[in-house]
Image (tube, rainbow, N blue to C red; front, side, top):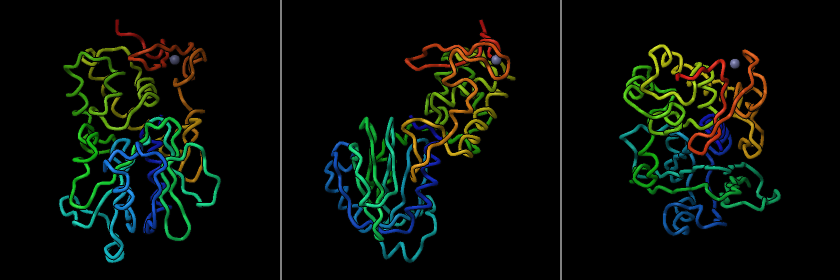
Length: 299
Ligand SMILES: [Zn+2]
């Protein structure tokens, strides 16, 4: 499942490939990939003739800023919040489990699980391939705020690299919570974009057992956890996301974090720090990996 570093890697790839290019036409091969508007024909008509001027990311949501082409030619600078001109619309994308955005030649072999094809001038195509079909796309028409159409945007906590995600914010959020820290980290409302891999890696780095209740965490543990979250995510973005069989960048390159994980997917292997055998347990249906020695249980 793509997490924040993978989605950020895709965003950067989209910026390098699709920006300042006009959409000539769109084909929807699976109607339910289009979450909004209700009629996929409105999605197709809405995107036609638009130019992508910028790709933004909120949590695991990708948001292309679109301008109708005369406007795009006039100003290609980024949009200031609050002063959004009425000609600006958006293309929203969530990759979910298996979604891939690929920048290809329209003549290249069409994979079986292709759901949406967005064609650009200059004989280029942005292709959405999604085996499990949980991926979603939205077109947000001019004058609408993205969060009114893409409801998941309303439930996101601060971005992990933003000033809002401070040590004091994290400490305050965890202080009175009875939840297990692993579950809290997976909550997109606490901090946007963390999934299973980075939750496990952050807890290993900070020496915290995944079943520790948030309210039982000591101040020094939270002081270790906060930078661990930021560093784990940042280092993975630096190397282009993790390696999953289903994750590829826009230009088809696999990430390589998998070879570098401390605990994730390493059940039964020796801890890279102490040699103890990495353990795995199920928490809320998700596999959780940890070192019983480096991450001692609070109880
Ligand atoms: Zn260890």
